[in-house]
Image (cartoon, rainbow, N blue to C red; front, side, top):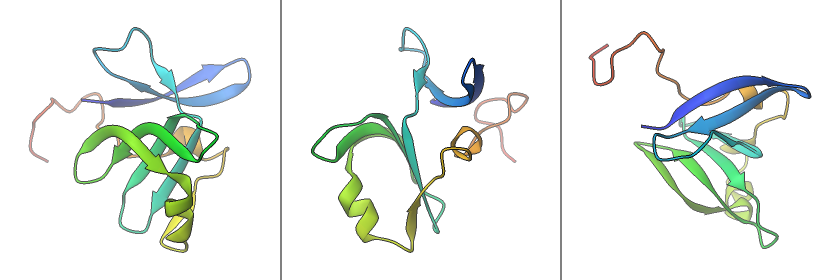
Length: 102
């Protein structure tokens, strides 16, 4: 399960993604949010506009997505402001056991 964490850096707060299989948490470089509650978090930005990162939809899934296609969905999908990015995404509180019912 992917964990979203806000960490303090010398440049301020930063959103990172952490997975058990990663050597270290990966910084989120850009993010988008939708009116349906989906999130796209880019950890690798490509010049062609196809980025790699985490998508929080019905499930959390790593993969590639197109920034242009997300922009075409405006106003239903919008880019998350840099100052809001460290506080974005769906998170499971640390005190909730994994798989517990709410």
